[in-house]
Image 1 (tube, rainbow, N blue to C red):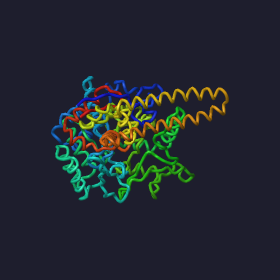
Image 2 (image 1 turned 90 degrees about the horizontal axis):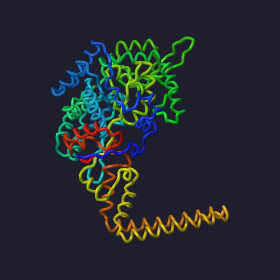
Image 3 (image 1 turned 90 degrees about the vertical axis):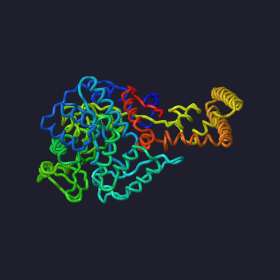
Image 4 (image 1 turned 120 degrees about the horizontal axis):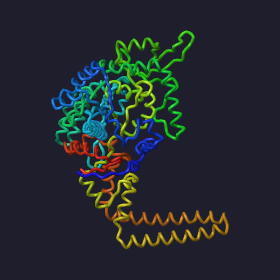
Length: 536
C-alpha cells in the first residue's frame, strides 16, 4: 500500500472555518485550543479523583473484556490520559470515516506516549442520539452499482438508537453483506456482532473492538447510569446556569458571523443544551426554557407536554442521571468531565461546531480540550489504480467531475493526436481572432463591443460543441471509456460525494484485511495535514 498527500483544500464542500483551522490561522486559534499542528497537548496534566478514575476503570473494563485490551486498561489505571474520538453507532459498521477516526486516535495516542506521557485511545459511542434515519443504513459497492442496505425496524418513538435491540430483520441484511463482501475475518466479526437480541451500540462496539483489538482501542458507551453520574457536574451546570450558557452561545454566534463564518449549530430561542428521556417510553425530548414569571421567578422547563422546575430536573439528575442527555454542543464537555482527555479527534463538521462548544468548555470546565482533525482519505483499489495510471487522472480532476464529464475527458485524451492538434489549433486561432476583433469593436463603440462579445461567446460555444462531438464519437468507438469513467467515479467519488462518507467501512475491511488498519494508523501518524490518496 502506498499513499500520496494532497492539501485539504482539494476536498470539496468543506467549511471556511474548518479550512482556516487546518491552516492554523490566528483568527480562529482561540476557538479551538490552539494550532492543530502543535503538540503541547501531549504534556497536559489532567487530574481526576482516585474514586472517579477507579469507577471509570470499572466501566471501561466491563465494556472491553478482551484480554488483548488488558495492557491499555492497565495503562489507564496507572494514570494515562486519553485521546478520544467518537461516532454515532450505525448498522453494519457505518461509513468508512469511522475507522479513519479510530486510526487517528490510535496513532496520536501512540505519538503522545512516545513523547513521554502515557496515553490510550478511546472511541466514544454516540449511542444517545435519536436520529434513526442517519444510522439505519450502509452502502456497499456491488459490481457497477452501489447497494444500500437498510434496517427497517424503526423504533416507535424518538428513543436513543444505541439501546435499540436488533430483531430478526437484521439476518437478511447480514446475508446480503455475505453475498456482497465474501468471506473474511471482518465479515465473520460483522455477522457475529450484528445479531438478533444485540443492541445497536453493543453490535457496533463489538465489531470495532475486534477490528482494532491489536491497537489497544477502548470503546466506551456512556449512556448508562454510572457514566452519567460521573458526568453529572456538567449536566447540573447546564441546568443551573442554562440562561448564562445560552447567552454565551448567542454571543459566540455573533462573533463567528462578524468574522464571516457560518454558524454550524443553530441556537434556538428557548432551547437548552439538554434532552430528557421520558421515564415510561424512553422518548428523548428536547428540554426548552420557559421564561420566568412572578409565580415562577426561576423559570420552568418543558419536555414534550411535561413542565418541570429546575429543582425537578436536579432531582432527576440525582436519582436517574441517565435520563438527562447532552446536546451536540454540550456532549464533548460532558465527555471530558468523564474522561481525562488530552485531545479530541473530530471530522470537519465536528471541528466547525467546536468553535461554539468552546464557550461551554471555558465556563463549565475552565479549560479547553484541543481538537484535532481526523485522517481524511480516499482508498484506491488495484483495479481502479490501474485506470488511474492509464488515464493519468488527478484527485482534483475526479472531485471536480461527474461521470459524464469524466467520460468526456477520457475520450478527449484518447483521441488520435492529429485530431487533438487540429481541434487545438482551430480553437486557439478562433479565440485569438475573436479577442482581437471584440477589443477593436469595443474601442469604436461600447454598445457595438457588447454585441460583439455576445456573438463571440456563441462562436466559442460552437467550438466547444465541436470538441464534445469529437469526444462523443470517440466514446462511441471506445465504449470501455464510459465504463472506466463509471468505475472511477463510483469508487472514488460516489454520487458526487466523498467515498469515506458514503461507502461502508466493512467493504474495505473485508477486502484488505488487517493490513488496512495498520496502514490507516500509519498514515494518520504520517504528518500529512491534508487529504490522502491511499493505494490498496
